[in-house]
Length: 387
Image (cartoon, rainbow, N blue to C red; front, side):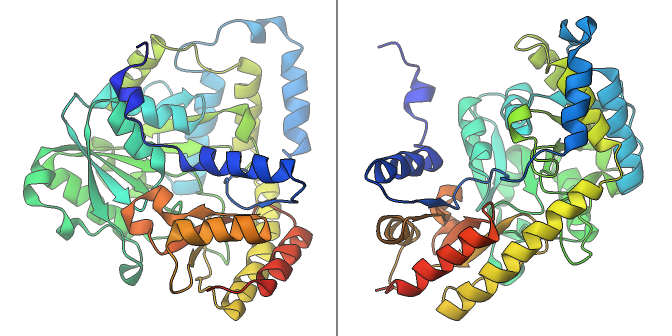
């Protein structure tokens, strides 16, 4: 009676369902190892704690932030882009502070599309893209990602009629959930496609700094002319272990940034200023703490990647993100295999179908527990019979 149709028709959030199953098993005494949610387990760097505590002492930081976020943080974002990608940004017009990128993505759709507008969404892809489109009254159009094609966008698979009607497309590299990484030419093709059909581009760069073996993730804004069509989301959650701090940013096209800023000014008053200033310190750091995080994640992925392939659960070795994207054994659906791992071994993973139809046949495994816990995962897996 008191619930809107758009909320009634929201698909079940698989992550929440599995967390409930985990809670039920733990109530029975099962020691569940959670490899499902992509939340860093590593501590926030000490220098950020200290910066937060220092800034929290000042009364002026307890007042409202400006709607677009503190200039100090936006300048730090612009400086970071200059150093990391050789991309110039105007802090006042091309950078907007977000209360985490999940919020920003959902609000972007409200700011950019009208009811009935079509949005190109990667399949498999981060579920919030589709739910955000649904909440904005739009229509999600899948552009398929395929392992054989390196999980790069197959725009040729999108119907021309859909491309002509699409208003926005999402890209996500390094990719959650597939772990796929790309070179700049892939973004170049996407920008050319956007120009051909007058489509805005939203690049989700949440895992830009979580990379291995010398790989450097590109920014879509490195493509000449990309600012005419593109914005890019950045997060401090993954690289600086600040997930609960809820701080991120969006950069790029001024018109889109202005529309999102206008919407948000009617919804929130940005993030606590002390958090914004600590986040500015993170982006202006030498990134040595990020490098240390990556060394830890790489040690974990090397161990679990080798063990999974030895056991018979095929997975490629990623160059980015802190996930493994593994094939389920023959005879299982993604959901069946994820449920068996949880019920029989107390190992929680995410079924690939949580990320779209083309995620069938895969599970996503988060490398967000210690090596010792991963050794226990491996021990439990070796005791299982996949049949």
